[in-house]
Length: 233
Image (cartoon, rainbow, N blue to C red; front, side, top):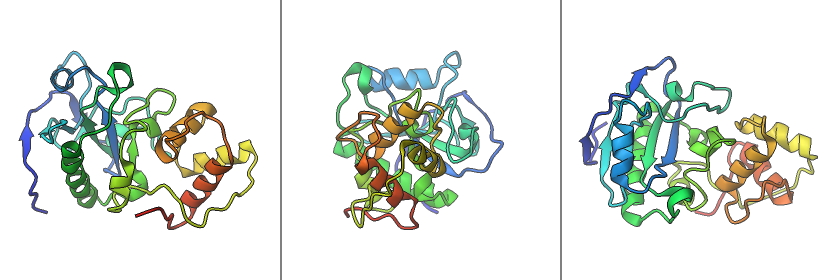
């Protein structure tokens, strides 16, 4: 597949060999005070962190690690039974100061660069929509990124990520324990139950993130477990 994207190579030494085929794409925010600080850290051998790509706020795309290699972006993570998420994923860092340094919306130029990059990676590796996830999805007890301001809808409307279900919603009436079983079946690590619910809300119900299981959460999760969840285009 020929890419029309302009990607600048800025290699990081922080990678090793994959032990699994690529089956997921993990989106992060950099969570640092500047894009340059993030780039420097991702290329610092002492930091022992990296990602395959970085997308700056002006839409500049950097390739830090070749997709053939295992970048070090996910840390201790779990998704749909995979515990070596780094081996099974492509990682994209999206420049944003994050919750610690003044979290803000992601600019249009940044999203306009990210969307075709996600599309190409997804097609290249045959990644399903359900495996295009945020760092907080795969590490709910540790991470918040890319966070509630990230425009998942822009990806979902192009079938690059799962939509927030809005149609034909039905409350299955699960008790909280049943909800947690369903959340685990969907893909989350539920050992820290409140953190898992919070991560689910951050991704699929960002206007109210309270870690509490309610009817709306149950309706959304049931719809996501159905073969073709439907959301607003």
